[in-house]
Length: 358
Image 1 (cartoon, helix red, strand yellow):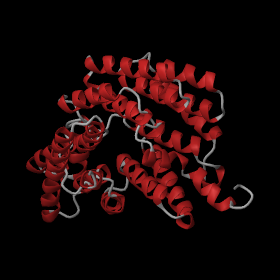
Image 2 (cartoon, helix red, strand yellow):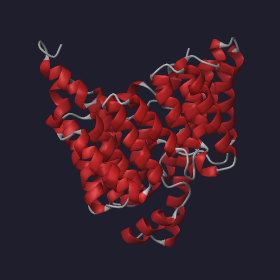
Image 3 (cartoon, rainbow, N blue to C red):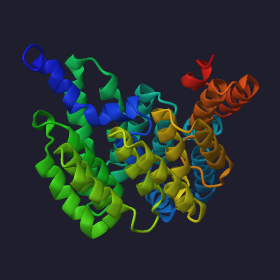
Image 4 (cartoon, one colour):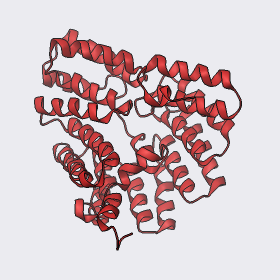
């Protein structure tokens, strides 16, 4: 293939990082994405953005309610609030960014791009806005024809690099950039040498993320022993629930089933005592489902995540319900599967995977 179709192969390589999220829900790219802190509730960062963009106190409360709905997986509710805000002020940067993220969670990436771009036009120096546009463009690139994928992959890189320049000590942003560098070939600006530089910066900012990126780089270089050591080291810090599921994902990729299941169990245990690690329940269930292992445990983990008050946009509740519905149907519980489908559509009536459930 390299000889006969170099361009297509290069496109596939350039977008490997992006395709992982599109085709393997529990892959390292998506699981790492879910390990990041994406403004749970109304953080100080969110209030800082609101102050910077000149939102009134009343408007801030409305933005806060929209963000809370997004985190809870209530896509329809969040969309309604945000569209009302934008009807009165089309240039509300935070509302545009949040609506971009709602569309992202619904896998409507073309629609998401427009809102993210509008947020950046209004506030071009906001690092998080560039981060989200990079993610959206990356998903579009993973689904594009090879003729347009290169420009989209380069746009993804540009947005991540801009975000990193604007917020050079943001571990989440650096992690996205480092993962892009790890998987993308040099033709679109990638390379493990660049990724190593980012990993070294993460070492001083966020040790767990640093270990994770070092692990991805080692795995890319076929150093599986080194990769495992780094993934294990990532679990030693605080908020270890998701690093455990990153380790489990590594074991899944290399078909080390018992170790994978053990790591999922450790991640679930860590999530019980750490609200910021609740997404480990979602990740663990996704990993087991992907590997076709322990379906009953996967269902229990999805149920525990859905019952948690600490759900986030990193694991959309309606997406968890769709996956749970599939597992129930496989187990012969048709009525339960229908209930989960209905619950998913009640949260996000246009979510295509829910509409397509049989």
